[in-house]
Length: 140
Image 1 (tube, rainbow, N blue to C red):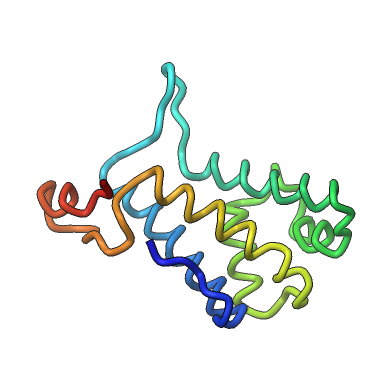
Image 2 (image 1 turned 180 degrees about the horizontal axis):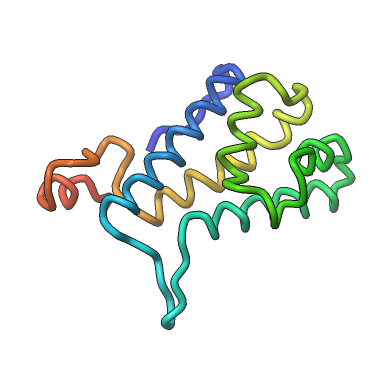
């Protein structure tokens, strides 16, 4: 999988992560997929809130008050609609200070790319094209 490189600009890095997250969402919808465990169904939106909640808790734990303020600027995490997409969009639009973006993007990169590695085909796999195309795109 492609890693986000340090030489990318903040908006480019945020756009890369947003595109990856969007692709994961589209793949789950296209396949009618919802990850489940012991009869409990978990959707991508559930992961979004969990990731945003983790970022909020970590920023509070480390005393990153500027990050906390940025994350809660649109309301409590539990009430935000698609918080990961919103955070990335706001960073991409330049609404985050360099220190906030610098704190969030490495953590979001690790989390989103890890999620992508565990939950689907490679980024290069075709989204459409039937089950054979999909199956050929899975990682070893």
